Image 1 (cartoon, helix red, strand yellow):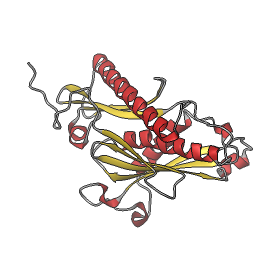
Image 2 (cartoon, rainbow, N blue to C red):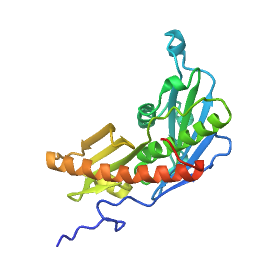
Image 3 (tube, rainbow, N blue to C red):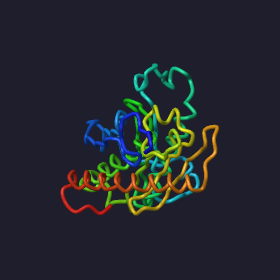
Length: 252
């Protein structure tokens, strides 16, 4: 019998406790506080009646969706300096916000946002691993809630989203493939992956690397299998949450 056990006692294929709290930010059109265990991210979405300059210059039709990501100074044990204080944007934060934007644009028809930009802001309130995956999962919910309010107000004619989007981390910790890594596992993992998928089960992005280690094709297959299981569960939670919030049959 294996003596392997995860620090928090979860099974290898178990997600952390997941929760979504709607309307967390009163001034956002749509907002959600998403929790993956002790990782907590505030996601807010707002619509702006303008598009980026490059779209105007190139006469590109439709609208745009973009994301911003930041970690609040008290989100980590050691205070994280604000970008404004440093005088430049954190490279990791830029990479993550681009990932969030790409993920959401994979499931949205930008032609249905004519002349508008949908802004999605993800601010990490508390970090314990998986902030980018929690951000993507919560960002979709915030954007979907915002879209519904805009449809109800007559600002948008129809839902531009064709599917849901969610993300989860997987990795090899102490020789075992595990799902949804908290910081202590992420720190010590020999292999670390972030997987983004649609509600229909299609891949949007795979980010993976060996941390001074290698991994086999069999291990890769196991990690992808874990990620697919986790995202299927997350997608079901998203659909249930939105159905309750939007009151009625939901067309994702």
